[in-house]
Image (cartoon, rainbow, N blue to C red; front, top):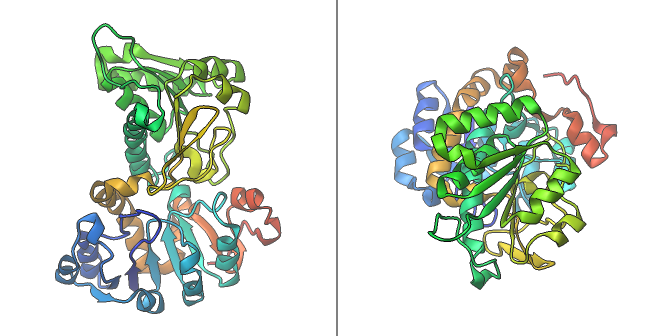
Length: 378
């Protein structure tokens, strides 16, 4: 099998889909690897490392032409659309977030019968193993970014998230107790903040509290766990210096838990980091920003809604991502799309196949139910 990896071109996306270590592992398994020249440079992996590992360095177009499997980090974006016909009847393995990105991408994947497997919907038990490492990075970065934009030069409240003598700790509210939410909460608590975590399931709230105690000891006493009701969300957000949106509905658009009136009632200069923007955002007024133009203001609140935050921690994020994806890639390289049949959790990652959308939440979110087929032939 021929596996290809290309340079990401989304704004300030520095990660790459495959490391030289990954190349070496795939080569040992008997596969050919084509990598776009310069694909890994911004992640800390120079061309020579790929060559030493056994990859052939070629142009982006040649990767599309030669590869049976294209492994990426982010979804294909409009400048890459003209190359999608070269993926006809081939496999695309990447983060897709089809419910929230340009619907034309889904149409093109369907039109050209691309077998598109989304990292974010692959399951293993109750977990999302290919989303988890990037969610951990994003959770930490959400707090780091929030701390930055709370500075007055960004029109923030003018506070830090650290412990400062004779001052009241910053109030951080986290919507969602999944991987992003937990990482953000743990980071904020470690800095000395008071943290309120909004989580719908009571059993999950109990689990989060126990894990925080295990990880942070006495600092966990500064965490408050609340049910996800409009009244409790309104009360919590009104006190927030930093609000982190970390809600996830697998494959579908995120629900909007924070209304316009709630945003208006927040403190002036409060910062909103909506990590759920990958799936449309969970806070009223959230719209996609970029690393080049990261923030905007509404009602005196500072919004930061960057969908690829881990791209700024490219070395760490790429290593973590390849570690997670490589076992699945090896299965695909050995068996092709048939590998999905033997692993129900892996099958959950299939979003398009043979000219159909195969993930119901994606079809519903986009209004493309006419393309939906729950039983693809692989």
